[in-house]
Length: 170
Image (cartoon, rainbow, N blue to C red; front, side, top):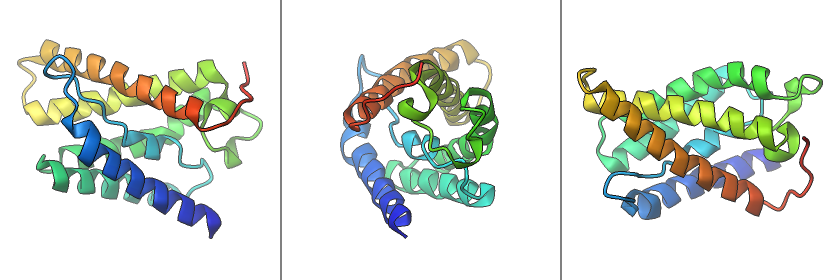
């Protein structure tokens, strides 16, 4: 029960941070961080896959409601939740996969940042592709995805550093 309350609190915090603060940050006029994806990225690997998908959809839907993006966040975040287990198997620790919570302390800094970078870029690419609703300007979509991903990854790194976990695997 304690973990459930922690994740409910985290869900509320990332939504509030995203809609009240981060959606109002627009670096260079178009680079916007999407820190809310951090919630999905750090869900335990032991969590039921269907529940992970449901949480991804609900998180994206709540962000869509506040942003008026008509399902773009819901689709991209559900895709992120779907792909997450595959990337956890690639980048996560092999010996304790079933019970690990993704973090720099459990994955090691290098593997965690690779895990985050791939998934954040995929999420952002899907989001911007659906938002643009065209592939005719794919270069623009890739550029937006890349720049927003960098900003988001830096924020996730900062959150991980501030979380108080001092032991990192290499």
